[in-house]
Image 1 (cartoon, rainbow, N blue to C red):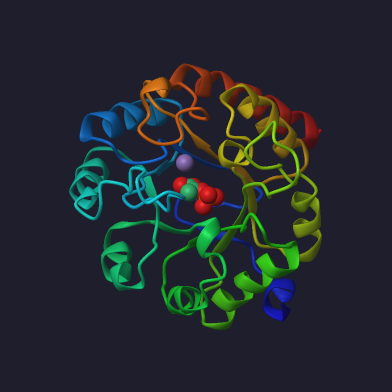
Image 2 (cartoon, rainbow, N blue to C red; image 1 turned 30 degrees about the vertical axis):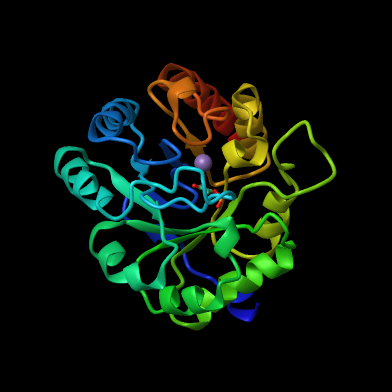
Length: 262
Ligand code: PEP
Ligand code: MN
């Protein structure tokens, strides 16, 4: 992982500069409707959040679970971007959809299950868009950084790493948040790393504590699943938090950030 280690620039993408801002990405697990997205967007803008999750396709464990609304979701994303000053983060699963993502998506997400999809990584390495590279739940930090190296080696150094928990013997949580990966990654690269406490825990009652712990550990940001009516989420409803809860979380996050900067 030569390039990952040698990366020596100030990391800056539209609406985020590492070290100056926290990269806060919030939004539902998946796009369900225009109404749902607009309600979330309205609140995020009021809270000063600049990045929204907007997943059209979902990598679900079971083929019978909701697979996402599909690429027609792009129409909702277009309207959302026309109305709100938000950058859109969306997961890409199919290499054939790259063109449409490059046109409308601001940060292209590579999900945990595709972290070692090397053809996808090579193709995104040639892209000019920032990439959010999630850690595979069965992958070591070294494997994750090697996946990142693919992106850099193929020409894209706008990569944000995202810790999202790994599989362990523990069953109280969906995954185990590997908090130590934050300072470890920070010691190995100057690329930003953020934490997704939602998929790490699978439990809405843990999202605030894990977010605060992540920021205290030096995370450059967070990705959090929020929903106007969490219990009605079509996917991942047990981990979604409400917009009010997210607003409270954000305040505490800012307090922790200030405290560790003193
Ligand atoms: C997601 O962020 O929508 C997601 C599916 O997460 P992960 O790839 O980490 O499971
Ligand atoms: Mn989800």
